[in-house]
Length: 251
Ligand code: PEP
Image 1 (cartoon, rainbow, N blue to C red):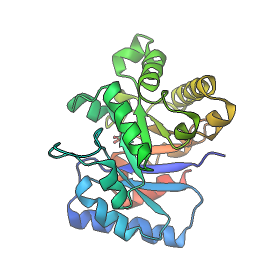
Image 2: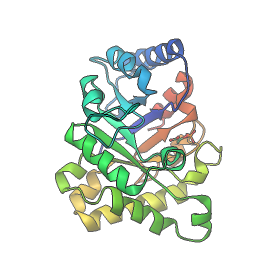
Image 3: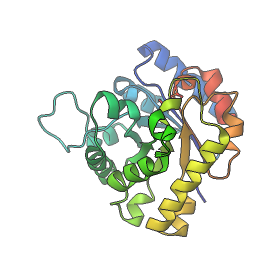
Image 4: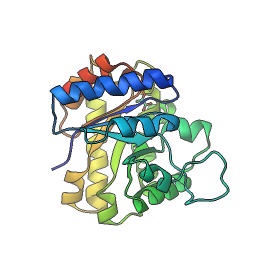
């Protein structure tokens, strides 16, 4: 059976002290409220070691927000999969729409990042999702299909089994306008059908598909109640422990 997960994408926010406090607050909660669901925090790269040290032997996992498509070498400013693994970072967000938009990350580059992550036992949280205009033109299913085909469907069954998908409609990210539970379920079910067609029923049923885009303590329960929505990738609402914990409790 697939694991339900709540993952926090802190983006470029918080000071060292604030990051320390937030991780400790989440860890305190998990100590008193053990869960079989997955809880992942994805802080900025400079706080990954702090988070993974604090999370040692806890129920919380740590993810990066990005990963280099290269193994090592003269790539100033980049962070490799091997470096992340050496800090006990077990997940990496790959293909976030902000990386696609501001840093020109193409589907082809993302496929290389996915390969690097998997080579180093880091599970990609692969983001896909359409722009508003693409949805308005009725192209949202094709856009998501193309993103999956070009960045992750080259994987074999075993590698694909280590992947988490996050459906994040771009128009819902940071806008306060979440997809309706019906829109989320419709796309998640479509994504699962693509995985079924590409691999098989078992792989499809075992794949965790997260929803991301203005998910908050008020709407999380309704979104997560859908059969194909296995949790959330949370941006703004992951920066306050109270909100993030309420979303964990909505699983
Ligand atoms: C995100 O950036 O992945 C995200 C879902 O952001 P927000 O929750 O703020 O919309």
